[in-house]
Amino acid sequence: MTTAPRLACAGCGALGEGALPFRCPNSNGDGRDHVLARVAPDPDARFSDGDPNPFLRYRSLSYSWAAAQSFGLADADYVALVRGLDAAVAEAGGRGFTITPWGAAPAMANVLGLADRGAWVKDETNNVSGSHKARHLFGLALCLAVAERAGRTDGDGAARPLAIASCGNAALAAAVVARAARRELRVFVPVWAEASVIARLTELGASIETCERRETDPPGDPCHHRFREVVRAGALPFSVQGSDNALTIDGGMTLAFELAEQSFEGPLDRLFIQAGGGALASSVIQGLTWARALGRLNRLPAIHAVQTAGGFPLIRAWRRVARALLSELGSPLLPANDLADDLEASRADASAARWLTAKANSEAIDRAIHAAAADRARFMWPWESEPKSAASGILDDETYDWLAVVRGMLATGGWPVVASEANVLEAHCEGRGAGIQASATGTAGLAGAMTLAQAGLLDRGDRVGLLFTGVER
Image (cartoon, rainbow, N blue to C red; front, top):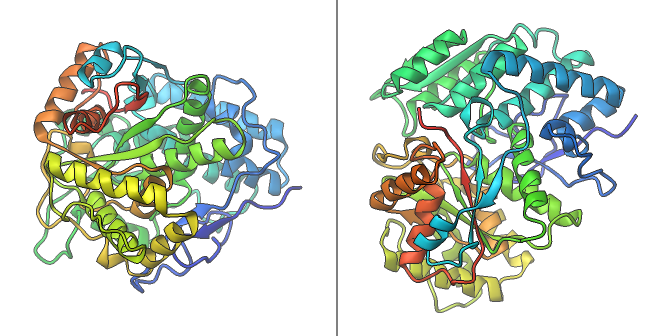
């Protein structure tokens, strides 16, 4: 029997408790950013066993497999559990999990002013439910299944409903996985949720609750407020926000492990990741960092998180952390002002990031992150007005997994990018022109790359990666 896997809070250092450590035990409204995260990969872990299902291929790196081992379940039993749940997902959603494509995109490289093989796309649109979101939820379902198989739930875990707040892709993924796991699901959606999404959720048996903004609500997303209320009342958080359920990051890391294998022979210089709540970027950053630690990635690319001019709370937070770090180190440079969204702002952020890459060591970055975690409200709070963009899937009022994403950008020499709405729309057209049926949300990473190209911040020899995730509905 192996040692149980550990999760520690990035804000206070406390360890996760119980068989299902969703949240830090100190998440008590003290103003600190409390988010649990896996401590480190097992140095003896087998990175890949060649299975086409990513949840089997990388199982020895997953929380659910490590937990199963610590509970005394044999590897063969775990494999059978994954295959059974994956088959149920295929029955509910039309397909199971497999490695998603990675390929050069010459037309996009041309738009960005890069060499013919300078732009590469990982296409998640043919994944379960049409996006990467199902990776997060399948990982959570595996954690629940392992705990129940081992008798480590609180006795009524199987009876408690699952809950999620989402405007579309995450809800659809949750509904498919919940149906496969035969679990009740409550979905909290905004008033503007698409009719096709509502119809599909209904078909999958989810309970749908439409959430209007209330004058009595605190700032922030009304869907997330209602979600938190039912979680406090006993529902299990089946979400893609790491702040609500740390184990959601685990399944998302499979995307990064695939990317590490696929780009091993042609390492990336930059990776653009669209960010709403931040779980995708957080998962990819952690997964690539693990792959690098295990010798399965030659170098980490500079991470560029992308948000739209309609609302960019993550970028505001990065600028504040960078500003504090630059001041501490005596730099004459500053990032852009909190709300700046033009090309000059991109150039100012780039200059600040490049100075920090040259001058800020890991200890200085750790100090800055620790200080930001201790006073969350100075750095991350809900966007003051209701965000609006064609990239509706990344319009979260706040970026819940912001701290891990800010750390990842600082550590890799990247910086965040505000994409104009014109670039959001053009990137969507470019994606469709390449034959990838991704939504404007799904192609928003390209919109960020276009912004850097327009600002003169991409070199022709750069090799950039894009994640297209979220099928057009």
